Image (cartoon, rainbow, N blue to C red; front, side, top):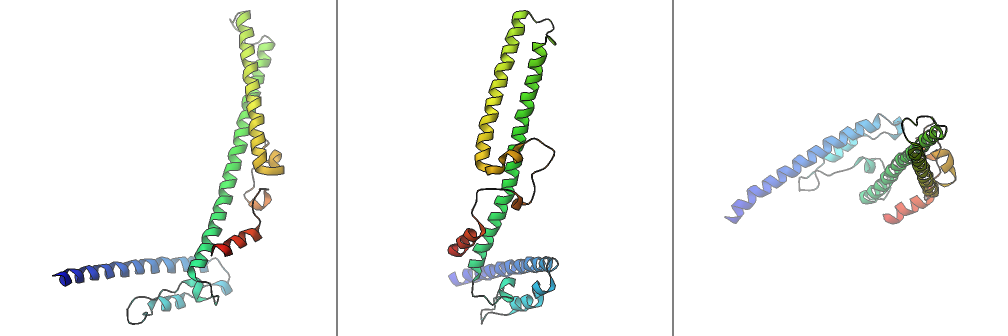
Length: 211
């Protein structure tokens, strides 16, 4: 009874494995095709070799012998796990660079909003001091409103100084130009930006040691 139950289950598992392998093979070949369209001829991956490698039975098991494209055209001794670690580390670095650009733009936007708020308060304070826009407010109320505006302006200016100081510590010597209000955009190319981070040699050492 146990053998009868086990056999269908084993066949089902093998069927699921074959289906999974076929799906992964299809995705792999699509990725190879896309890669080959974007690189010079000498760097292209031989798709037919990959197909042959994936179609070769591994011993008597009948299972596909998976040969990944970076192992087909490479004679290096690094195994796939090592290469995967390096790839993951590189993609993490790319992601961090993208996140850094986004955060820097948010910093600039924050500073811009505080500048605009301070400018609006100064305008209102100037108008109140010159007697404009007083309307039906009494003299005492006029002085009280003017005092509140001055207090609010002082709070905003203090907040602006604290924010700029914190952002400057993170951005380094180029903080002033990156945070100043202007039409120019923060460049997309991270090489144009200054940031306290490890250099490429340290990053490569980290990749090798991680493998």
